[in-house]
Structure formats: C-alpha cells, structure tokens
Image 1 (tube, helix red, strand yellow):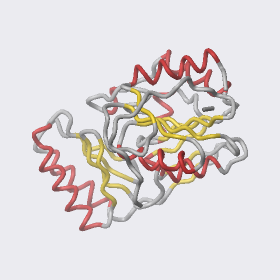
Image 2 (cartoon, one colour):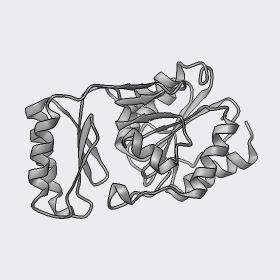
Image 3 (tube, helix red, strand yellow):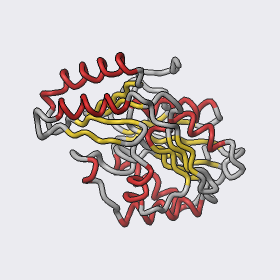
Image 4 (cartoon, one colour):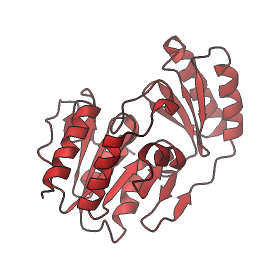
Amino acid sequence: MTLDTVTIDLPAPGPLRLPGAALFLDLDGTLAPIAARPDDVRPDPRRTRLLERLGRALDGRLAVVSGRTLADIDRILESKVDCVAAVHGLVLRGVGGEVLATPPHPGLAEAVRRLRAFAARDPGLLVEEKGASVALHYRLARFEAADAQALVRAIAADTGLTRQQGDMVEELRTPGPTKGDSVRAFMQAARFAGAAPIFVGDDATDEHGFEAARRLGGFGVLVGPPRETCASFRLADVAAVIAWLEAAAQGGSDPR
C-alpha cells in the first residue's frame, strides 16, 4: 500500500474534544516511554486512571493498537481497555470480548531459530516471541544494527514472513492485518460507528493507522520528532500525549 505522506513539520493538535470522537492509541512511545527491555514497561497508576476516564467519557470508543501481545497490553494497562489490537493487528479483541487471531506463519519456527542463534553472540540482543511474530531488539547492542537488519531481510526473503522495522527493533510477522485494518474493523462496530477516528502513535507501523483514520474522517497524531508521515498533527513525546489526553478527560468537551 502506498501511503500519502508528508515531510514538513506538523502543528500540535488543538484541544481534544471527546464527544463524537473515537480514540486509537499506540502503547510504546505513545502511552509509555520506550524501555531498553520490553518487560521494563510496567503499570502506571496515572496512566491507568487516565484510560479509565477516557473510556467513560468516550462511551467505550477507545482502543489500544500496539505491537505487543494481548497479554502484555493487559498487564501494562491493568486490563482497563477492552478493545485491543495486538501484534500490529494480527490479534483483535473486539467490543464483545471476542478474540480474532491470525494463525502463525509456518516460517516463524525457522525465524526464531535463526534470530536466537544470532542473539547468542551478545547479551544485549533480545528475542521476543509474540505468537504470530518474532522481534529482535538491539537497543542494548546498537553496533549490531546493520547485521541484525541484514539477517532479518534474509529471513524474510527465505520464509515469506513480513519484515517490520521499529525503534531499535526488527520484527518478522505473519502476513495479515495491519494497524489500519484494526481501525477499520473497530469502526464497523456499533459502539464506534459514526465517530471521527483519531489515531495517536510514534512508529512506522502506525502510518497505516494514521491513513485509515484520515480516510474515515478523522486524523492522525505523530508522537516524536518530525519525519515523513500520514499524520496531520504532532506531539513531542509521551509526556505531551498524556497532558493532551488528561486535559480532554478533565474537560470532557466536543471531536475536531
């Protein structure tokens, strides 16, 4: 899919008005700072209270759309968000609690084996298995970046798995639904129907979410430094996202 991206810097979004909006939030780099190890991200009382207030103010039109597993999202967010797209959209928990999961690609076993063999050369290389995907984190071994990227490209070519790049992480995932597909799926549910979708995220994988939100009458908010993006607005960091959302939750007012 070709995304209609722009490279200019973007303005900050105006005050978030919740009536009539549907909110889709990435997790790492958006609701929580990115940590050196995935397990280092833990529940946070302030974030938990915020999500509870947002869910009530939005009448449930709130979803978290993340590359993490469903269990990990529930651990970090203390199960306060019922609508979740996990593993970049390969696992979807809908408004009724039903879970739809794309079956893992048969090439994942080979990918895990080759990534673990590579990771054995440095303790800073971390392999994270997610069921329908596997990720290689090199934030603690940045000098291994070029070799890690070359290996993942080779595994993708050999197996047919989809390569997905992130912030100091390379991932091989089962081909299938994206974050944008998750937004479209949620927006078809009665709870979300007719609302203006707002997608907030920091990573390249969030671009599909930005585009889906825009095509459905809403917009995307990029988190982090300026880059090529489909988003319409930008917030500097996680702290800015939390402040923006808290102002909306406290004011409870009406979408752009």
